[in-house]
Image (cartoon, rainbow over all chains, first blue to last red; front, side, top):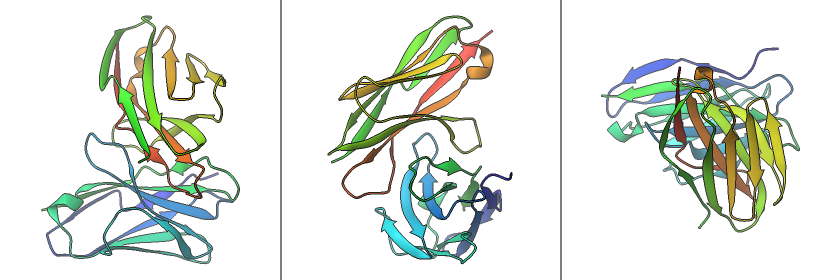
Length: 112
Length: 111
């Protein structure tokens, strides 16, 4: 049983560019959350998707957007990249009715 | 404002030297408190969920406890493979789905 898979594993972009990160949830999970983890910090909640809708959003600007597809996979898009967007981006999935999150290994984004 | 504070930031132990990690939290109403382990370059791996004061959970050399204001992760006779960052997170009851994480405790166990 595959866990949460994220792609790509690493990405280097320059300021002002746009990026798309992808996530496939664990089998049987219908809820996907995205977190940003800066170096030496704990993960920060970006948003959560359920039934293809954004259910809750954290304190992130509109440059951060997402999507969930009918097969429950998800994308995180970041526009107009800033140096401060450099971080590990984590996707987590969970089945309906549970609070336990299963995390992927993340995408390490470097903005130069 | 909901908040999680972990201490110490870093901890070095000799193999077999037991210790405890602390997680203090402020939340409007606690839906659950979670402990995760994170290895370098990896995503957090679930360890425990605690729901109410007085609750305890154990797994191998780890034991998590919960009071109304803090949680402890006790590590008994640690081994080098227990070296990792341990993250604490809370989820509030106020209709929210997000986890609020602390900054973690970096544990290094020396052979």
